[in-house]
Amino acid sequence: MNIRAPFFASTPLHSNLTTRSCNAVGADNFAIETHRVSYSINNEKGKTTSIIKDCSLNIPSGQLWMLLGPNGCGKSTLLKILAGLLSPTDGFVYVRRPKSYVFQNPDHQVVMPTVEADVAFGLGRLNLTNDEIKLRVAKALTAVGMYDYLQRPVQTLSGGQKQRVAIAGALVEECKVLLLDELTTFLDKTDQIGVIKAVKNTLSSSEDVTALWVTHRLEELEYADGAVYMEDGRVVMHGEPSVIMDSIEAKKASYTDNINS
Ligand SMILES: Nc1ncnc2c1ncn2[C@@H]1O[C@H](COP(=O)(O)OP(=O)(O)O)[C@@H](O)[C@H]1O
Ligand SMILES: [Mg+2]
Image (cartoon, rainbow, N blue to C red; front, side, top):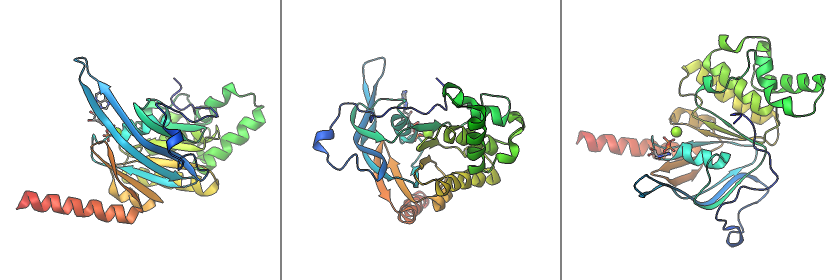
């Protein structure tokens, strides 16, 4: 699989659909919608484990939303369902297309030796002239603040710069939804902020690109237009980042109080 290839299709991804019974889904102003999505796996002994439970969410078009929650709560699994890499066991999923999934480890998505060649990689299958390719690559690299690095060998870049190049690789194919899984995990503070700002800038310079950013770093919430908080496979909060931030801080404080008492 081309790990950065957007998934082109004109129809939503459906699995055990419940579309007829939920009129709210499929509205034009949401780029991502799920309704009561569940995902279970069977182990080799035939035991079923439920990983995603009844998750419903709506992400408005053109916004940067964050998906938060403790380690192992199901964030990556839900993101993979949205990307179409996993099929839900039940429920409805709609994600505007083309969509692109960017992995956590920047070294897992570099495919070509130079920045320019790497970003242009996915365009090979489209019937574009050289000038069209150059224009698209320049536009995508400018959006993530990496145009000056056009001719640089990818291996000389920092982790955050590689992540920004990977995002440009998605944008160059005119993807409408970016699904970003913990891109800042391996990055230092400067790189971390650089990647978030690149995503913010991308969204403000194009009208209809939407991003869902998975993170466990609470401080990143300040860049979000909205947030979804998960626990144990369920969506437990959905909405205003400051409200979710306060609620998580309160949970942490109460947990610390309990340990210390
Ligand atoms: N293929 C799998 N087989 C068994 N367990 C899995 C598999 N994928 C995910 N899990 C389990 O599902 C839970 C959610 O995982 P994940 O989505 O990676 O969480 P997060 O990204 O929030 O850390 C974890 O307990 C994980 O161990
Ligand atoms: Mg994860």
